[in-house]
Amino acid sequence: MQSEALALETRSPEQTMELAAASAEGWRLNDVLGLVGTLGAGKTCFVRGLARGLAVEDLHRVTSPTFVLLRAYEGRLTLYHFDAYRLGSGDEMAALGCDETFESGGMSVVEWADHVRECLPPERFSLHIRVAGATRRRFRLEAAGAGPQSRLEKFRELLAPWVCRTGRD
Image 1: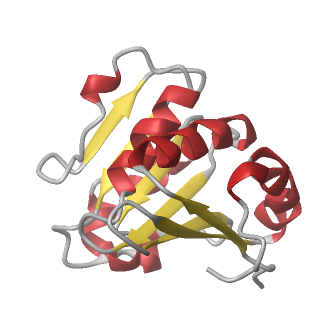
Image 2: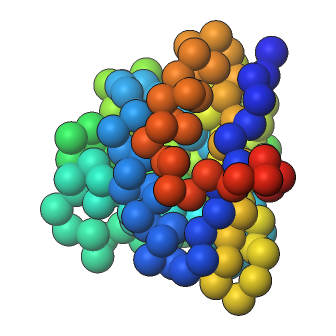
């Protein structure tokens, strides 16, 4: 069961990074966040901002792991950054040991989560990113499972400056 989504908007890459950094306070051990959006929508920009919010020291290391598939960054929580763009199925993602990583005591973010939906845990968050202009982005944060659903309101508070007043994504 899925709760009502949280609609957000940013007007620049810097605001996207600020939004992501602000969200860091709400993430817990073993949280999984799937990112969905077109090429250039801002998925890696979001991860870089999240890393900043999690106190990862060398933000220049935070790049899309398209060719290595997984990067780990040490911060307040270890941030596991997957990129499923080149994967053909969830089986390929599972072969990387994603289940063990998801439960390893860090936080996992999966770019192109729609490519490997079947291997994501039932209790997770999803962030859909839509290009709404040259630098403007619209986000829809969804929570699947009772645990994540119970925390969506906390994210509404943390991300209040970016909440869409119209309720539309």
